[in-house]
Image (tube, rainbow, N blue to C red):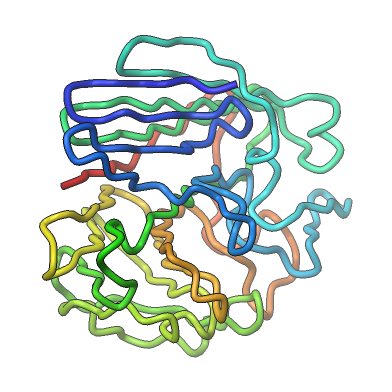
Length: 291
């Protein structure tokens, strides 16, 4: 089942499965901005990453002396969410902990996603509530995939990435699927980066981010592009599967990150982990702007 939102400029479609954005289309230009999930490349569109971001070492973690197993990016993306509010331009989805989720994530929670159209923007809001009696440890993130090219007459290589504000950012390399913190570098993201598939030969580009940030996919050969912006995510991942030469790029705001190569496996020590006291609520959001 899907929910459709519509305003003067955009039509957005969200699946109840994973509360996943599966389409964002411009009405006037009839351009589809979201990757349509061709399984030859990647069968998802814009999954929610919860309660971890990235991959755990050996796909497991330790909490209070017990070992738990979680797949890459957690389990929320494969769960059926409940629609709890809906209007023409907004919809809210909820996922609550169950006996099943407790087997691999021992916390009581409610995860709420809200999608809201506002002119030529789609705002994606995340809310995490700790329903338990102990501190909750979690990560959360977005993984929206954008069609590149956006128009049939253009190619992947016609596009470039723009970073705002225009300044250098710390980049964290991957060693396999784990972070190599000791080899951080200062990346020159104060200028645009041309999109070529070889950019992703070592997997995702991962940057530390602070404050307001925006990332745009643009081309000099058309006025059409898309921008993802946020105010408080500490990390962003930029990814396209290599060497498949996939016609899409993901821009992923993360409130959490993969394990480091030297992790001790303890959830409470995990890099980037979010802490939430009992009965407290974590709120954040990101925004997509089309042109």
